[in-house]
Image (cartoon, rainbow, N blue to C red; front, side, top):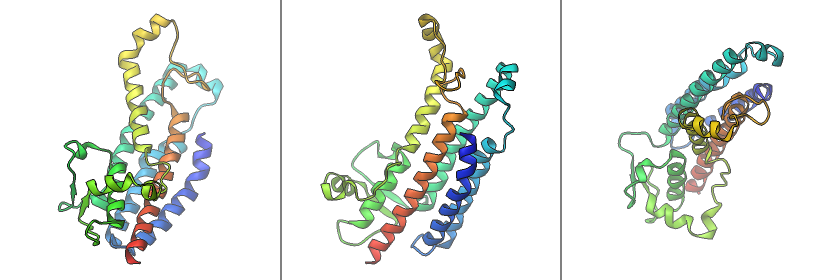
Length: 236
């Protein structure tokens, strides 16, 4: 799986950079496009490279110092989990991280929603503003909610990976809860926590994390394309 990530990443990064070049010609501008490229660079440095550059032991070597290697892998996974969420936040700051940007919503808990949902609402509201004029510094989330209930807009954004952020949070939380709260239950059931392929005693490992990083990269590509499409629709 780490080899797959290593082989795919150069092509995925090239695609991201190409899209960001297109984004620089939209209302976001060249400064935010540069910020997006720095976010992708940070994603590589803090999340991708630690996996693909690491000298992983062979299966036999891993077994020879099993506990030591398992702890090293668990530490790496935990570190990358936190880094991924920071990268997510930095990615969306380019779109609605300005101090004078505002989300308008009748829902009290709207501010706590994932950025991926806010990004979806922002793009829908930009494409179909109530007053007919797109406002890049304000998002009417209630308008987006109404639009999402209409069949013609449900699949307009064509984003299949938009819940990648929630998936990472669930993976991280499950891993932490297992170590903190799940041991007694597993002991009662007389079974270990084991990955179905590697049998590693962890709910999340480099195998699953590598897959998640590929999915997250696909989401970044989708989000950038969504913004490019939104910008084209507004110009029309």
